[in-house]
Image (cartoon, rainbow, N blue to C red; front, side, top):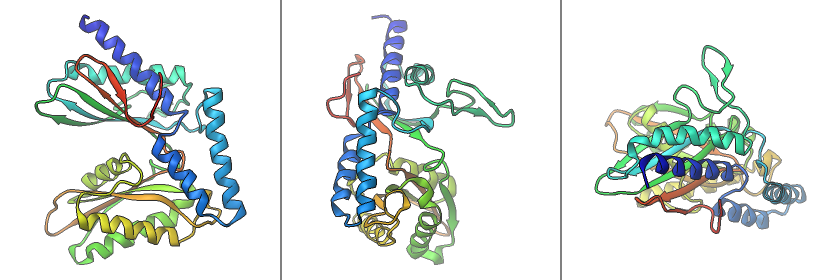
Length: 299
């Protein structure tokens, strides 16, 4: 197969996959929402979870997006240095976004800053947003697709704490963010926390955190303990599904971190709403692929 045909084939696959995840939640999110419903005693909370499930069934049956805000398209790429289309990936994902926009159809959410003009294609300057990680001695590529909605993920928040504030300061910041705007982000939320050396690195890590599977734990024992404590504490707030009160406010808390400067603690929070539309796909060097996030999915 020549390179032009390979580029077209991967573009078509990514367009179909991007469109697909706008209509169908990943397995881990669907399973967690069903589990959270069983914890509710409030009839209104149970009814909200039932409505969420019915919404997903209708989106699948009618082949339509499960939320009117299909978000800004973001791709998180973990590509091998020897992946044969590494140099073409940016072009592929841009055209895939345009194709998914037509196919979905996806709402037009790319407005050129300062010009205030909607491009109508969900592409524009640095959009779709690409986050890169290059892996030596690998010839495959794993791509996380994420639809960042205007009410949940995009209003994330980051700051830099002084070292004296410590991990208590991190906890206070997370609680301040979730209690001040969590209702507007369509809970129950998946909360991503980045702890790093600056605001921008913490923000990037917080977004990577919400790409992790619901129910997974950080490999660091102390970080995993903090994830659990934050999850328990946020659930005690009682925000509940869609902010109408209930037993759970969050689907979970995922923390990602880096080493940091001794004088600062960068912290950031990103949230995914209950309709947490993300997907993970793995391409081999021959462009055969495996869909990891949606078991049994057929494009």
